Length: 471
Ligand code: PFF
Image (cartoon, rainbow, N blue to C red; front, top):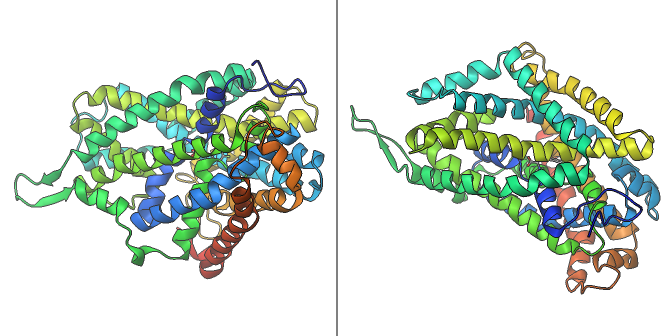
């Protein structure tokens, strides 16, 4: 089954390759860095409940819709809607997707740069013998500085561009297949270590500083008094961001999926894997947060401040720290390549550019935005728009506005414009596999998903407004 995408396009070569690449895009910093701190900021358990609900009723349907559109059209998000029946007005999805790609990769490469610094710090055993406070200060000193974060960011963007050059099969598929399973194993080890930290008693005063059980309670006990419209919008944004949906990444990847793949089961499996990693990341982080008496609302620095403490406390922590941050960087890479791929595929197919110059131009232009994001914590920290620094502004706008809007348009197109026959033909592989749940899927795509997205979106923005969510 070589390069099965028709029309001579590059494509994935096996079922496992498809899952690995799509899960590689989905599983990334969103699960391990973003999920814990957004959940921490928004009340923990109740946030998790809404998040899981959105994955099922919105996430899976949007993902399946993207795969279906991409494989049917055999094109990038922009080209796909140009080609498909009654699709023209929806090219807006392709345009918004490119803007979102710039915003996302900008802040994503900032954080990925931090992970590279943490690989370096782990190798040089920099956490050894440091107190929780000192470890926090290390992070604070680093991310507000200029040249360190910028250099790592540049290295990360070069790595991203390098894999995208190599193409779909020899780049994306080859690497993700080996690396994603390794990451899962390390997170499981971290979960066990974090939970088994238990109670933390100050040896001098005998006072209990904290207990890992409180962390589990924070993550799993739904305290609805902490939930408001803003938190629900954040759960929606996190679901979109984490699954890589709403901006055409999975339309693009769908176009590389072979005609014999069962898209419905692929969408379910990828969503499940992604959700599992996010929840496990929560289990790795929150018990440790509580054990060490830290705040779950520590913001974007949360994992960088918490995990080095666990590594210090566990046997073999030196090696685990290196492996963990290395694999986190790799998880970030398998996601960032998918974002860059959207821009590059659009330039190659729509502007008839060659792959290499398209990659260089796109990556360079995105890096300019990325530099601004990195500097938003240092030199540019007083520069704010709507009360947010540039990093927060890009992050909020992409995740909570562009992705949900893109997702809304995508399900509306699939449900109401693409045509039932055409959708059925694609989902059932031209009638060769049973699409048993088709009726249910169509109902969700037509009614439930669009209404839910529109409701959460308008409610979240209407009650709090863009400015009121600042900070
Ligand atoms: N899903 C990735 C993560 O969770 O880290 C990030 C991401 C990739 C978001 C691709 C959006 C996207 F289109």
